Image (tube, rainbow, N blue to C red; front, side, top):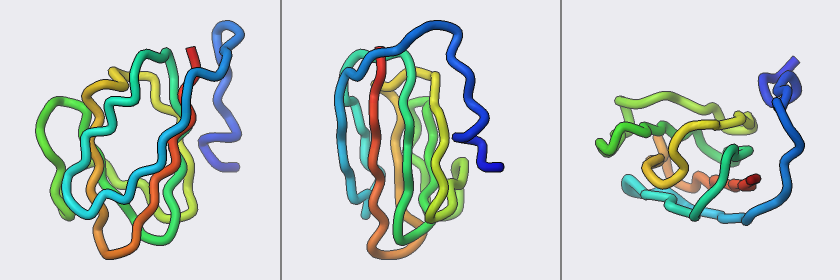
Length: 95
């Protein structure tokens, strides 16, 4: 079972936005206010960091192509980079 299938919210959430990025270099998402985000990666693996430092193609937390994760950290500071060409990151934000 994928991690995204196991997420349990502690309260009802409502949609707050959508963003699609193609992170060929470290891309700061900063999609606005929200409590939680569903992040889906397509085509290529990506890495992310949320500590204000840019990830590289070898440093950062990896999300494999085809996987989705729930993220509950600071949505304004998360940054992505692809490991290879053609990555697509789809993000749904909830408040």
